[in-house]
Length: 330
Length: 288
Image 1 (cartoon, chains in turn cyan, green):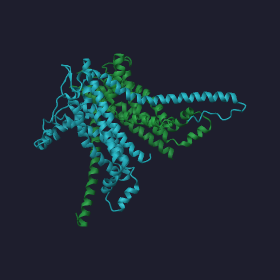
Image 2 (image 1 turned 90 degrees about the horizontal axis):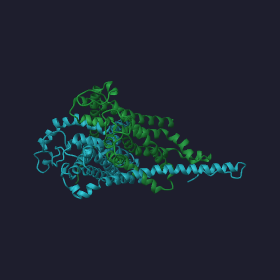
Image 3 (image 1 turned 180 degrees about the horizontal axis):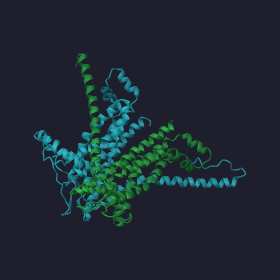
Image 4 (image 1 turned 90 degrees about the vertical axis):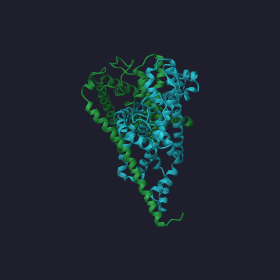
């Protein structure tokens, strides 16, 4: 809409200057519009260029190792052979642990903030939970290394080893020396880090449920829990899943905190108590040590894999969230 | 199936009570981590804090020093990041909110991509800047670090600008346009003024986000044990120094890392709490 630029009086006494001015303003308007258009397009370009440049940077590794890059667990900088199964497994496993912790806790927090807490308490508690999202990753890492790891090693992991270790089947996950550093610790730290993201989405979508729906359920004699479980949750299902995927996307790409507490070990271990590695932590730890082209290329290829996986997860999250927004007519 | 109404009632009440207790417990669980992390960081940091942090440069292993070069490096790169990310973000957000009505598909695509960029792993953006800039130039530099940080600020500012401008009442646009003012002047002189608190909040939140960013700086600015002569060479930053020092076996370095963590945490808290308080105050003022 070029509404602004047409000046109204062309046959007045000032017709010539007005037309000049109007033409100049049209030019300025068009220039302005194109500059803004360029800036907006840049957002798209950054995402595309990031993916392409990493594919390009990692092409040597992909060409050399092919599928073995993903399925081989041999990461040997000296022998110039790189298989990324251990970091890929570490990323997936630590994120899975994070989600097991973060999803129920976030649901509980959203439940508390929308149904349980008195009005005056809601805003401050929501702000405090959001503050968890503001704390930089590196601070989580330091706290994790110096406070949480010793706590896990002294109090939690021995107990887990004693009580879950002897169990059949799943016992192997929980057996191991209580070093403190390892997959379980990293998963818990990740879980804490994504709780604010998931819980704030859940809280926001719970609030979009029409009061008439909830009041109808209450009028039929439902308890608070029945309203949340049978009315609120089904109504917001897709957005809740979207929020969970948003948290998952965060957990997959989280770097510094994981780097501190995961242990940087390129060994595959069934135990969650053992040190491991993740894609992001491998890149952060080894990038400046990469002394050969194939080493560097392998690390960039890892970055490409991480980027593609998080993009897919985040895209699913946004699609599920936008479904709700559309139904709400927002 | 058939239960006596009384037992059913007791069961329903019990599950209701249990759910409320669990919800409260989950909230306390979440808050306890916040308290634990803040107490550990602030106590250890306060113990390690001294004026030398701000006057001396990072020491070699085994001796004392400060964080002055890292603080300056962080400040310069953050400023560069905001200088790159904020204008581009404001321009892109303005396009989405004001100038894209003829291309709705394009607009929604960019919004979608921007939302993804907002949560994309920052380490990947660092790798991106490494491949397109550091590798081409041939050396690590503070400029590359600033560019990487700018890419993190960008989506935050795009989003807040877009959202804030959409909140400006249409009446304001119509009133200005009916005076025959060209659209770019309406945008710059009328709409930006109305949306300034929101846009500024976005910039502050972007700044808060890059204050503690570490991963993208590892491959762009690297680190520097000494003063950087200019930004076109490896540049120290507080988060990267924290990473290096915390992972080291030296107590003096640990202590400096805590001091750095204290400074970073305080800056982030002040920025994010301040930005939200500022926005809240302005909303209240305009409602009153």
